[in-house]
Length: 305
Ligand code: FAD
Image (tube, rainbow, N blue to C red):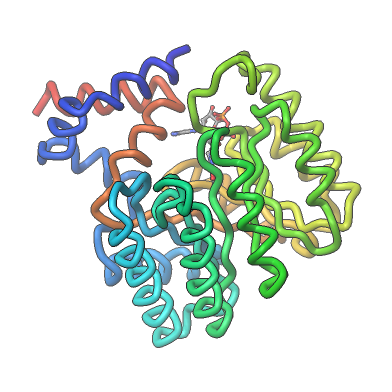
């Protein structure tokens, strides 16, 4: 309910303009965003590596309205991959890509164009030892995104995808995709979805998460357990054994950093989702919507300045 309300308010263009233009937003934004340019994100990656953590990198941006912007996104990822390779940071790391940043929703040709763009990007990434995972956006995009995934996997079998426990359909998608080595990031889901397609109560989402986690754990797939939820992490530690080999934990940059280190110290592979870039508003709004305390902190920082 709270999250739904925050996302509705955040969707208002006037709110967007006010928040993005205000320098007062920056201190709170920087808790969740690693930096605005490649150099600052490289520094963050090095620091995370020093702590024994891996990364998946998100060049921020989504819902483009002009097809030309897709090439800007592809170009930005290419520069990032080149810089990772130059700095010796490519191997074992990953990029996360939103297909709406590649024009997936731009007309009837959108999905095919986005597939072509992400294929080019994947070819570049895998040449440098960088994995690619497709983020999942709202429920209307799932079929197209999974279709793109099938195309990608024909040439890049390590290409991964995200599945959202909150959606009723996900259990079926998990069963279908949980084949040998299939890299599947399981999340709860960050979008405001209608009751016709998604669980509305947190306890139901949590239960669905655990059901899907158990299916993945018993399959030959490679589960990427993306959550900060202490109870689910405990369950995952029990069902995914041995530590570190056939699965990984993932968390967002700036959230539960102590737990990230604890899991890495226990021998698990831990990957931090590191967003960077100037187009941070959509990502930032979802982080505020996930937790009333974040919203309170944000509002207090504006008022007390
Ligand atoms: P919650 O029950 O929401 O949180 C559990 C606990 O974690 C909270 O009590 C709190 O201590 C901490 N916590 C959670 N969120 C926050 C926050 N914002 N700030 C501070 N503390 C917090 N969603 C998608 O829909 N598509 C994606 O492609 C996608 N990719 C993701 C990739 C990664 C690596 C991760 C970790 C999440 C991703 N998400 C994605 C977001 C996800 O769907 C959830 O919205 C988000 O992870 C919060 O849910 P939770 O599992 O942490 O559980």
